[in-house]
Each structure stands twice: as C-alpha cells, then as structure tokens.
Image (cartoon, rainbow, N blue to C red; front, top):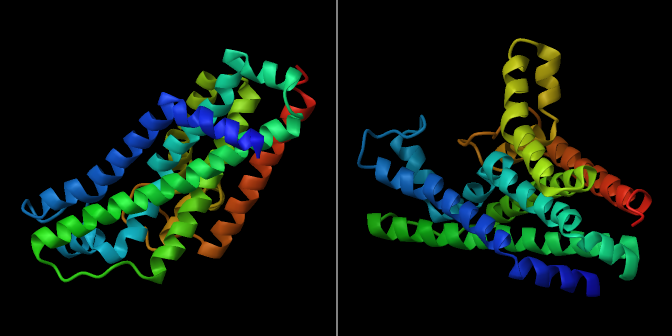
Length: 271
C-alpha cells in the first residue's frame, strides 16, 4: 500500500496526468455531445447518423454507451499513452534505478505502479460518466426531451469500460518496460492502436483469415466488447464476436501484458 500511495502522489502531481485526462474529457464531450447537438439544427445527419439516432445517443439513459464507445480507439490510445509515460519515464529520470536499488522489493515497486494506474483508470471512467451525464441532462433539458436517469445497462457499459481501459493500461505498461523509455513506447502504442489494427482490418476485408484475427486483437476485442454493450456508432466499435468472447480475450491480454512487464522488471532490470 505504501508503494501505491507513493505512485498515486506522483501521478497526482504530474502535469501529464491532468493534461491527458483533460484531453480525453474534451474529446468525449465534443464528439459525443457538442457535434451531435449542433447537427440537430443542420442537415439532420452527422457521421452517418439520423436525427433520431443522434437524439438517442445524447439521452441521459444512454450515457453508459457514450462512455464505452470512445474507449476502443481514441480513449484507449490516451490511456495507453498515460501508462507508457508513467512507467517509461522512470527510466529516463533514473527513478526506477533508485527505487530498485534502495527502495522496496521489485515486485512491490511494480505492484505500486500498477495499483496506482488501476485507481486512475477507475477514476477516469467514473469521471467520464459524470461529465457525460451532466452534458446529457443539460442537452435534454434545453431541448425539452422526456428523459430518465441511466439504468442497469449503464453498469454493464461501465464495467466494460473499465475492462477496456485496463487492457490499454496493461499494454502501455508493457511497452514502457520493454522499451525502457517513454518516447518509443508512446510511438509504438499509438501506431498500433490507431494505425496498425485499422490497416489490418482493411486487409482483412480481402483476406478472410486476417479478418478473423483482427476481431480478437487488443483493439478488436475492445471494439467488440463496446459493440456488445451498446457502444455502436463510433470508430473502432465492432460486432464481429460476442461480448463474452471479447471480454475473455481482454482479460487474457491484461494478464499477459501485466505478467510479462512484471517478469521483465524483476528478471531484467537488476539495477
């Protein structure tokens, strides 16, 4: 717990944490509510959505879906960047060397970082839900819509959001440890999350086996889980496999990424 508290204090006082959280909140508000709201008085369509679909997406009872639909691609990329920076920066600053030489056991030090990032992920999802709910209630009130608060479906969407965010966090931690630096880890992570998987999906449209593989890659699994809990209508959201299958793959990725990163930290980073 001491390691977790120390890492939480570091992340709390680290400007990059708040910058990335702020960027994500602005993105989810802009693409989830501002653009759709402005489009209601425009040409009645936005990103291929009808007016009724836009209204439904902005209803307070559908806030859970609004939270999860942004995480498979852009939200996940931001979380990956935060995790990669949190772990990789310790190599450039020399703090990992100091910690491993004079601090707690290596497993405890790594567990502290992972625990702190887990807290940040849960807080980020909860904060996104609160901000989106406030935006949805504001829009519904301004337009005079009949609305209700989110129900049990929102809990399922939030649970899926946490699992998707956990996978991207584990991916970022793994890249940060493997590359032993923030810059390369961030570059590789963004290339994979935004570019590589999309290119593979394009190739998969021509090659059946490749298309099946893309459904269970990290981003594909995240997209399929988001699609299974109602997050359709956003880049990266898929419906190729069931939500249960996607969730199992995501759990597997979390275990593999975190386990591999911890093993490297213990066996390779001796000083």
